[in-house]
Length: 434
Image: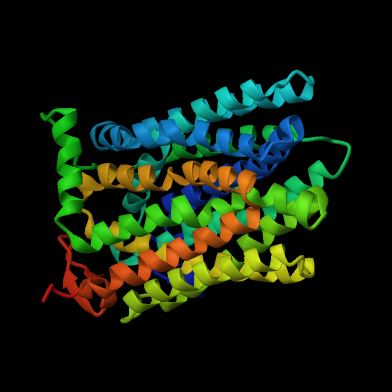
């Protein structure tokens, strides 16, 4: 597929795919949506902890959002492969915006209770089960596939960049007399703007699955992943990252308030440090492009992520100077983003269009396990300590990466071989199995 775009290439490699008008509009809409989401995440975490004074409830809210996303994501992927993806994405974004409007208004009127947050989190997670695979399946049709690595990096930069700006803005809001309600109104506006942007997009004809049952559609996607050792490893890596690695972010309110005594602004700085490191890592992955030793970069990034989590946990347990903790969170964010960009790029290049929504649904389901990881970390933090929960997550990520990589030659040599895709473009793939 060839998407029209200006002939002059972008001056900087990292911004190459912004030359495509459709992707450029999609990208700016994503900026608005994700920025609002990041502000909302900080505001919600602080509100929950302020209402309940309980580490467990931080996990309960994560569970409320994660459970429907886990259960419905594969079905959401099936729907994304069958219906008009543009229409579905408009519906999910508008629905999310209305949920945020309700939460913002309840908070502003001082009527919000913890059960309101739990219910809205559950409904938001249900919507995201359809939103995530649809969004991941849609944007490859706005670019030429040869620019996939760059497009993945740019969408990742949105998430990582807003992790700097969004939490900082959220922390400032919490630290002033405005309260947390403006954070939820920001999420309402962000989702609404993304829905309006998607309404303006025009997509080429997309091959869709027809004439089979939902169960068969799901089974086809699962079989596709199960018979490919590289995809299976990548999904396992996302699973361990979601359950054990990224759960430390949900414990930031505990580290900020109870360990470092840095308040709401300190929590914002923790989120911002993690996001700043992630931006740097994502930019590095984008500039590397089709690096031939991508497999080793993937594995190295995962191991370093685990190491920096352990060091951050030790820093907090020993009450080391807060800026040291911020620096370690910065390094953890950078190493995590490197290998997650490689994971997503490999998935997008190896999956055919007619399976893309379903495979991205499985990816989204695996990523949606993060709230379950938050619940697990919350339980461990309640009965042990937050530092112990984070260190345990780092150890788990390292062990999975090392043990599984030893027996998977294809992953270790990922990027060392290329083959021609159905669209006639060179795609970096894993080497053949021995």
